[in-house]
Length: 275
Image (cartoon, rainbow, N blue to C red):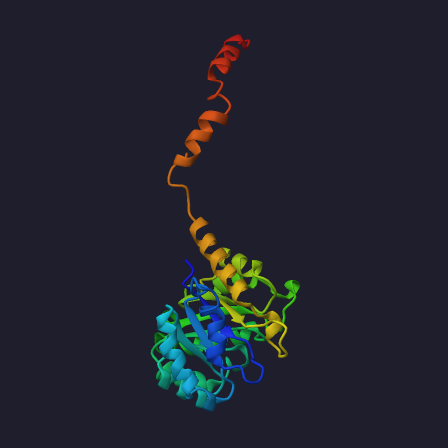
């Protein structure tokens, strides 16, 4: 089951606010939002968290059915994020071994903490999980993301099969496994979900041609809408047959199945077979 699509604004050019970036996918079409369920706003500068824009975002997001979240990069931003009471807090790959920050999040914040594993060794991932297992927090609160740190990431470096490695080693030790993508297009995200990733994270932007590290690997409103559409379709399709012959197959079976649509002829042929 896919719990949610987590989206975050790409690094923005001058005069582009978080609220403007939010409108790129929530109000881009008259029909409403693109369909993501959590909007994560990333602030490398801690003082940018407690601003009128952030408070406005918290008020605007519920109106369109999206929950507010943010990333932390250091202890100061962790404390400020905590004060905003987000539905979840994201720890990016660069900060996943910032132990003072992680300790604060583990011991003070009560919600889920989503941790990316880009540019992180397998031994380091083990250290991170063990750190969160102190006090029993990992199994109830940690979502571990497969990730490659690059902007954009070529398909050959996405390494989706690492999702399997995280599942084999940590599925029973953390709350669930997710996927954070910095690639082009949306096919990879659907494949990640089909492989069992329960959270999908993508950057979004108003214009992929803008200058900045993240924009080229981000989704514009139309792309985000299509991603959520395809994830929903994949979720609906990932089931087992309730019966050997589904109701919609019954008519086709009667018309097309050898031995049914021509059963009289088949019966005659059977009678003529030598013993």
